[in-house]
Length: 240
Image (cartoon, rainbow, N blue to C red; front, side):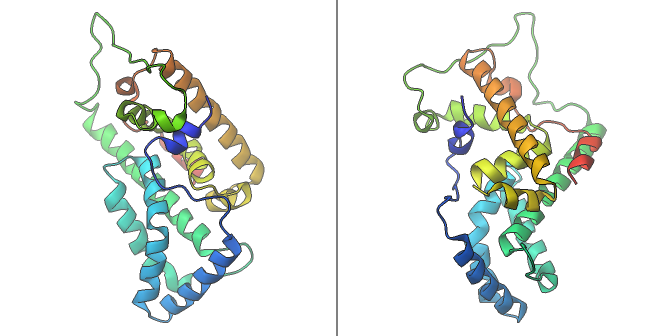
């Protein structure tokens, strides 16, 4: 099973690989310069262009509950920092904005980890009984990801499995497989060497595929994997 189910899982917008990014970058530069000169309309257009993509990053990394508020906070951070942004080298507004989004998600995961340490286990966690847990299996009517994505149960499973990945693997999978960034740009966003990005992506895809196979075999239920994975500060620190 490939990670196409991850791409299609919740029906979020996907950036197409055929987009003329050079033209987009030039248009973005004109809008950025206008926004830096004080045009609220220009920044509004930038926000309109990238809102769905930033929301998708937040949704995949942090879950649906935080997505609306955290997406808004990311654009507010970008607006406050925009005057210091400069185009140089491989820098683009998109790369810069996605980096803000990924870092905001990592900060949210850190806060979530701290709350978990203070509050203890969630009352919503599954209860293991003497009878064990009940696994769900996928009806074998069609193996097309587009058909599977229409089923709410499959959507929950896809999101739950992605949420078990570490932040660095979740970010790599989100940027490359959902946002369709090429490897070089994804590495720039994550501020890591190209080889490191490829290694993270390969491991994330493998982990997703392994858990998806368990789900298809009825050995894993969305409920057993529900909720974002609790990560250690060490793991988060390695991503930053």
